[in-house]
Amino acid sequence: KDIQFIRSYYYNKLEFLRFDSNVGKYVGYTELGVKNAERLNNIPSEIASQMALREGYCLHNVGIWYGNP
Image (cartoon, helix red, strand yellow):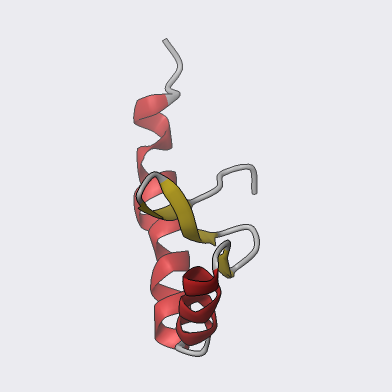
């Protein structure tokens, strides 16, 4: 539960969209980001694939990054 997957999208050094596995959906931070978040949150397969990245990427590599010495 303490592993979090975050995918952020930037344009001109400004974050406009973020997926957070703890929230379980996209969150928009600008007008463009809000529109894209609404669109992406209505695609169940997109949310499922992003949630699967937490298990496939984060949990798979946590032993490598934070292994016992």
